[in-house]
Image: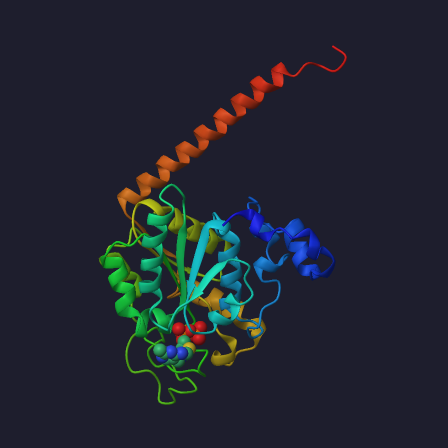
Length: 306
Ligand SMILES: Cc1ncc(C[n+]2csc(CCOP(=O)(O)OP(=O)(O)O)c2C)c(N)n1
Ligand SMILES: [Mg+2]
């Protein structure tokens, strides 16, 4: 996507909503300080239609603010609470049929590689735990087995929130939910371990208890998916509505679980680690070269009046 797509046609300037004018003037496309702008502009969801205290919304905002190239990213969503957030985005996104998200993303990534062989196009799946670990598990796993160059993000609120609180494979054993009144009878699925054995080059289990960590892991996952292979980020995103806790307590729940069973976990293959190191060097080299050019250009600028 060209950044020009966000420019306002001069003929429409007087009728454009203020929020779009703000987005065009100050929006963070192409800005390095995107996280600092969180919530300030429309593409970063300053408002959203989710419940108060929804940590899926918090994670969503952190993710879209951390995209290395928002203008060249395509987000693939699935049915669930997150599909409400997608409607607030000024970014390319696709709503896929519930469970099909990794199949749709695979096709999209392949088509974009053929259509734009010399351009970076990041394809990122963002879906709930029900979509990823239950109904879409076969599509998710097979995209990893095939080694597709996509990133998969799971918003793990440990239930089907959008349909009123059924248990998912990611619910905790014993969890009593609106539509699981006798409690869940089996253990939470260890999708991060499946991701590792299915061949993901990078896997991270993170939590809204540490938003900055989500951002760092997500960036790594996107970079690695470009060249090395599939990547997976699982984010704990407590749902106060279904957990029946005060919205202001979501943070406390995330922090408590972070100290216990939902602690940070990271897996990176040697190849992915080497790739990250190699591009770090390339970025540093580029920065040094730019500095050298700037210094030499600086010397050539004649002093005023000199
Ligand atoms: C093919 C299909 N099956 C079932 C549904 C009904 N449905 C909509 S959202 C949802 C649950 C979503 O749960 P999850 O993926 O965990 O997302 P959450 O709402 O918790 O964010 C279900 C079963 C559907 N829309 N389409
Ligand atoms: Mg869910």
